[in-house]
Image (cartoon, rainbow, N blue to C red):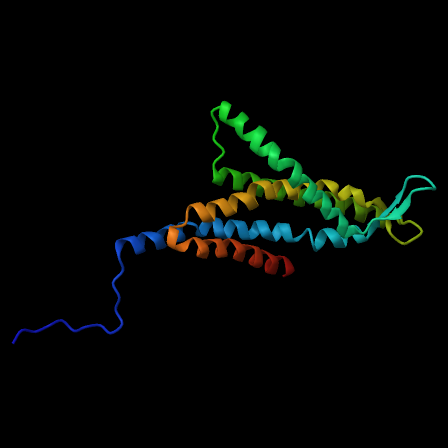
Length: 205
């Protein structure tokens, strides 16, 4: 009789379309890793920045009729304000200007700019912290035991994080949604959210 090749139990055959879909998702992996580090920086806004701010002068004194304490965590409002201002400026100003100069702002370039801005925000935060530690070493504290340095010195780092969101955060969502095959868009969107979680864990570590 005719000999037949042994049948492998559980073996599956995948179509060319399925293989290509998986390949498209795998191509997103480098950006998956890169944006994890972006969200690590972003998480500093709720941890490092707040800890830094609580040790600075949070009192606003604009005369006898206007004195109040500003909770350090409320400075994240500058992050939100920068997004509100910069999104329309990006869409209506920067992109058309670059297009007239023959430069196309691709999604990858957009993410790259955001990563640079996030890095700069950490440099600024480091310089502010260096100044704060210097004043503390000199014994310059107010009557409440805070370093005599206004918490509003943190404004720049919050604004830079907000600017980085306009580029990287929005660009990441576009990339993971547009480059994903139709059958895996929800999965790729979940991967984008996973980078946020992993970035938070790394920041906590």
